[in-house]
Image (cartoon, rainbow, N blue to C red; front, side):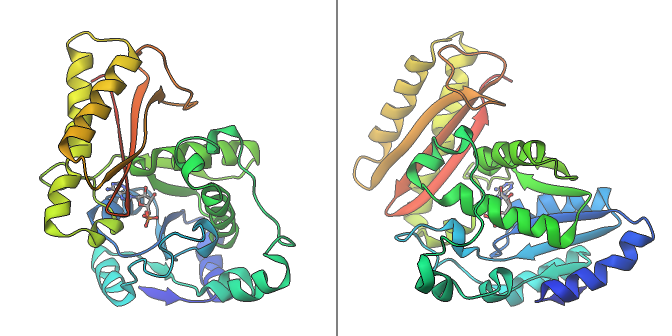
Length: 294
Ligand code: AMP
């Protein structure tokens, strides 16, 4: 496995494989890897000759008061695990390399406004986008850059970040980016908690509390299985479950039932209904989601 820190070296290394007609799979990550990431990587390894994993805590997708500086960075451990998995190349640039200047330099000039931005459509304004206004624009920017640097045939994303996958699909369609997007199911621990690098911020007691996201999903699914079809009723159930379970340290960001593809709210349950939940637990931002019909 080769580890690249510059765009130039990575591009050079991939060129011969591409010329030989080998397929390239890309798994973009922010590192602090866990089984959720590995499931994407295993898919990529199954379907491509070459797999590139990027490890980059992207500053442009973090708001001012978010956890950019404290986000876990575990490069050595990550690389050791990626090597074991059989990944071919790791791309771990600095922010300066990725953006051709440090964020401080960009901001010192004009707040970064002279730079090209990617403005995703309405699909990015709600849910996570409403809570984190610059987040998806930053995600789209870095994903675009990674696509241009790696030029992958396929790129792998987790349904854990359900809105992100929908936005990336939309961007790829709208901008005619020649890449196939693959969405992989959510990996959970034994308690049902969706794996996330941010779970490292939680104490064991908080981790236990955080399982109420999954319990709320199961509750909504059982509501639907019992024949309930009114989204507002189900949302009410979920909200009251979450509030009762964790009245003190919990802040609900949103609970929504949406169409799987458009992410528009659904008044009534259909086969395409997806439940999206976001909460803050002691300042830690947690999200989860699931299909409501089996
Ligand atoms: P991140 O490092 O958090 O930016 O995540 C990198 C990729 O891994 C994203 O496409 C995530 O959706 C995906 N991912 C993160 N956690 C999980 C999980 N528990 N199950 C499946 N995919 C995940």
